[in-house]
Image (cartoon, rainbow, N blue to C red):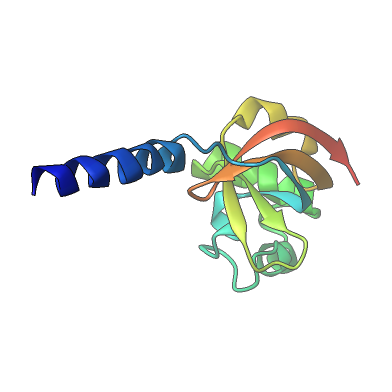
Length: 123
């Protein structure tokens, strides 16, 4: 019995460490820098600024809407995929401020719904 336990430990113990050591792979994300209210469908039904821009209340462009939600509504910058199916939190908020409401291409990693940006460029 002791021998079986030892064999089990020798075979499977290294696998436990290798699975937890894996770092997320960098990949390319294309989409828009938005705000958490529109991106997570708090003020929107389509992960877009359409509803808010129709009223004119939050501005006249996606950039206006994004900045107004960040400054005046306590939102955070988020990334919305180009197909509008997924929104991600962004780790480095200060890095994306200049891209508010713009379509961008991000190289980075995603982990638990949050993107860590290596590079970001307008599309």
